[in-house]
Length: 210
Image 1 (cartoon, rainbow, N blue to C red):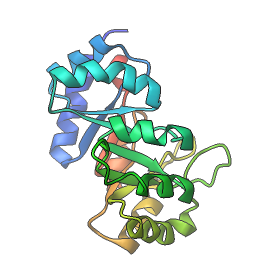
Image 2 (cartoon, rainbow, N blue to C red):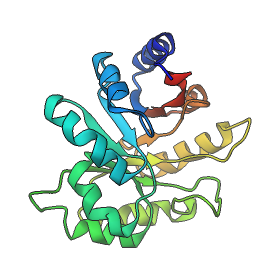
Image 3 (cartoon, helix red, strand yellow):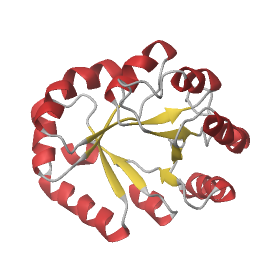
């Protein structure tokens, strides 16, 4: 499916007006698609799986130095070291085991990852990753104590016609901890609602390929 350049331009404009970072989600997209997005001035990319990202971006990063690769999918403990080698940012820290593994490697020369988000299971859904909202503050300070540079929180709200309530709660949680933290929330179907509720970063993929 070709890139919808009209939609891409529209979302880029909206992001610029609201000073929101745009992460292009390239799960299942080809390297050619990614290069086309780079040529359209997209510099932040989100991938869901470690192995897929490694395969696609190893060569791309050699030719395009100014792009940032971010993990936006669940992180398995046995893939943590691999993830630290290739991602500039991991948005899905959600449990102590992962945070502890990262803390043992964060200072090593090969560690590419500098920034982290904590993923919050804002809808408390059993099938989704993320820490329970009530433990967000405690887990945030735990991660800081381990040396992780936590720059924000991310979420994937339940499928719903009204995501406002979940986005509002995310902002409340964030503000209760620090006004300087970022909020990564909003995808192709709800990025406008997310921006209205204080999102600093939207993760858009399918809207670019409609």
